[in-house]
Image 1 (cartoon, each protein chain N blue to C red):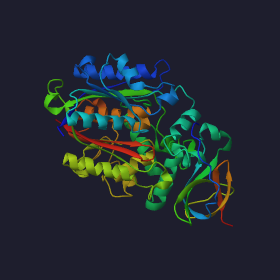
Image 2: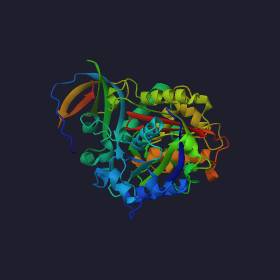
Image 3: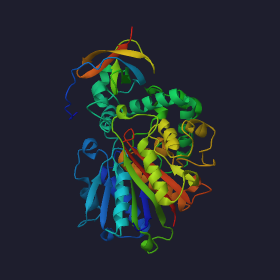
Length: 80
Length: 386
């Protein structure tokens, strides 16, 4: 991977699941993570973000909270 | 702009060809095309190459003169166009623009991709580079994942079903089985299509197009000179290329490809036709959901009605508007950089009445729709009998 992105550090806050999938056939660099849930979150603060889910599976319309960044990847989890 | 015509077409079979490299594939398609038009390489005034990721797949850069030179074409502008899966659609658009503007009389447009020398995970990683590698790509999005998320949202908003998506695969495999140049000449059943190995839920392996090697070429000329070369030239009646944001999460509504809608409206206006006039089409079915969304964005059906339209059989070979008579990307194969020009070849063959077992009854006005990434590039071309 030749792209060197700037890693985000600010919490994107809470949001609602806009769409989701479970990835079974990952790109080479994420082989160890599969299967994993990938989502697009509509953020309460505006805009959308592509992220991963930690913990329980979510569906469209589910409210989620930001959990953490792992190597620059934003992880959300189902609102408890 | 002066009218432009396709005066020659040429394709290699699509498939996995360990004995062919990127250059030999492109040269074979180009030579077949020049032979079809009875034109020698020395007459070609400009060479347009569509290729997505030759540097990543096979480590070769400077591809346009590399391939043109092997065909005996030198001393003319040779340029590679990259627009993800719409690379050769874009090359074709720019070639038509240049010939239409009067810069050249004879331009050769070739598309090629050599993909099968890499492992599937590596191909997946290279293809992901057509998305936003600082956003969705970094989070682990693959192209199947992006279209799976489009499918989920389309199912949520419009009630589109797994059966409707599977019907795209069943239809396209039935067509591809009749295409001697298709990658996977195999009829599949609805039951098979619904029970494939999951790739990115809800998409299974049967919802995904193929990883293929292959090349395609077309020769274009001003319409006024077309009869010098071809007994049955095919007119480029309308064409447009438009763009949108690359990242899926930057689009307002992911169930619509805005760029396709815009390109279609421009192409219809240029051609002086409407969606209902289009008799048959080659659409960019990189995933089954993409064919459903494309039919809606092109105005063939109302938004949300693409799924029922295909499940009712109205787009099969004998239906009211046959779609992907070649087998589409699903069965014919999807050597990414070759796909746009291959679609033009397949529409032209139908118009010329040379589609063999796949020949449709009404074949004087056809459309090709080529999509780059998750909709950031769209090329729509309308072809007619001259």
